[in-house]
Picture (cartoon, rainbow over the protein chains, first blue to last red):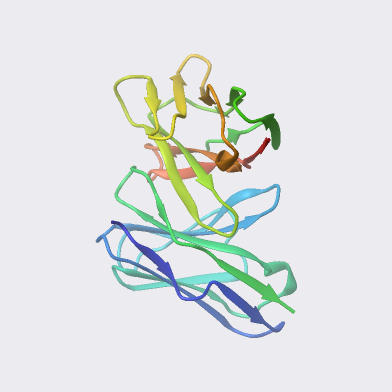
Length: 111
Length: 114
């Protein structure tokens, strides 16, 4: 079974803190993705990576950065968390073009 | 860029009734199509997908979707729903001309009532 794991299910941080969200997949997938999910807006792509050390901006990259040092791991970084980054964050991975496999999500609250 | 439209944000339906969740996308040039389901406080799970071949695809729990290239649609149907089908459903399109980038609809909440 493909497995995508995320480091935390729930996270509470304060405004201005640096936040790391980690994602690990165990199926040797080339592509990895970070989305945020907000009610009524569906999933919005923040960043994706198609290879180690490669990254591409998605639709809403502002305020976020990513790191992919190993093929199985893709990290999302909030350099200085703000209240408008309170959201559900979903990580996914896939082979080129085929279905994306999702992690369970991290619900981040920024106070 | 692609866009994916799910016109119905919520669909209430009684148990054992049929249901259709609508999905339209903007361009039919070289795409793969997917439906995902999300239960509360969980990630998304694949329900079914169209990559090529037969335009009618089915899931193991009775859902089906038909790829209609001329209407750029991929509507999801089930002839008889169960309470356990209550969830949010997302349509997604993979654009093969753009890094296989995925585009998701805004989701449809299916609420099955007894």
